[in-house]
Length: 106
Image (cartoon, rainbow, N blue to C red):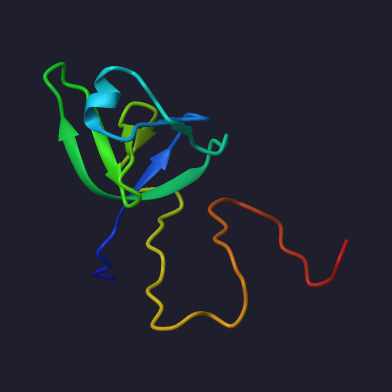
């Protein structure tokens, strides 16, 4: 089990809106749209529930994203990330799904 200081939110709606503040979220005035993907994970640092029971998560970038259109908790497959103490030598990415791997091009 890792004790990373991050919590993850899976964005399930393609093109989710980002808000610079909670006030902008209530007024429905987004300033950015997330990459249009159905499998996007973001880390967040806080959350808020407003009067109308609308929940929002504050991303590490300080933008806010609505909880509707995403989910927390256990992911399938489970995702926990890795904590690096230095910059990796090679670029890499996470594969969060079922893929067929190859040992040669093609």
